[in-house]
Length: 296
Length: 217
Image (cartoon, rainbow over all chains, first blue to last red; front, side, top):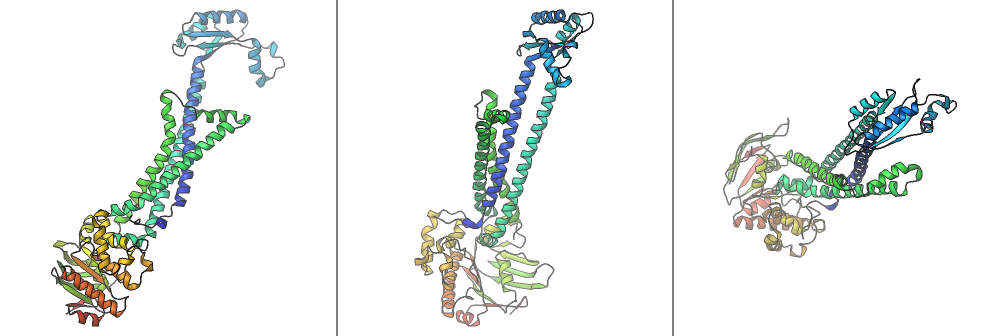
């Protein structure tokens, strides 16, 4: 059994492991955020895409109840509409009350709402439906929620980009830390490196002897970060109080084993320790080789 | 084997520490390099074991000009040179066995192929009972013998020693020089930097005198 070319305490990488573990932990949180945002957007879009609202305004010389009936008749004859239900006037009043108060609402010409569920696999031609409703009942207006959907997508997109930026910054910080640690290790073991050079060691041989330590540092840091991230999501999901229900539900969803294409998202978590190993190994190798090549 | 022609060396913008140094060694030669402190002995040795490049002149080692040799070619040449330093330069975290085996290990040899050779050499330098101990438990003489064993384990063509007897008592110094002579008889070319005139006289080998960076014949 041969002793290691560099003493065990030659590369005190505990600080690096601790710092990279924190980075990995943050990366796991960022990856979790990206997955949750992706799922939320899919869920919201599906919900918005399957539900429409028709608003029937009260105008003078027209019977709003008849207008509602007419719109319902049009909807029921339209292919792709699964269900159409006129909401009672009280439902419209409830929506308006927070904005203008409930006093005197019964005297106002409150618009009536029709909730429409559509078949998302064979949705109706929205433009044609909108046109038809406007022709039959001019004061009626079809609201397909597209504006809201676009807003939600924009917001989700922004959050996703921010999460990716955070991941990139984490990776850059990890690279900077490994560069600094590699330099410190080489500087602290200058005399050993000199002897190895003089007995004929190649730079690659010396770098390999050192960067094994960085490989294990990256591995442990990645695992610790992953474990920490999983624990946080588990705590959020399974111990979160009722007031944190939305967050808890979202966190819990990360532990569901999804079907189909979503499965790859969960593999993203495993990419964090893998990335930690790759960053530690390649960065230390490149830094060491560059420094060794500047030696005599 | 070794041809040094009109070598000059200057560290940065300082004065020249070696000036117009020229000498040759044939395979199997044994030569001393001497001179007062600061004469440039260690600088010359650093040039010869390729830890430093000359400011001017040429150095031909084993038939190859090495003064501008590409860095990637240096390990191959260095593996043909054995080095002994006054301060031993043993790696304290490695056993005597591992220190002696170091040149073979860095050359990619398999432990199973060289284990017995290393043990035999350690026995030859009289350190058999200490093969598994670490250098910090060895005496100065034992360290120097371990360093010599490391220098010759890969059967180098050229052995360079910088004041190898500087840290040992006169009796041990004489024994070490006889060890070098024995290696020389086996075909290794030997160049020893020393300032111990009595030892050099006793060995009756050619002496290269260096003073103020210049060879004095």
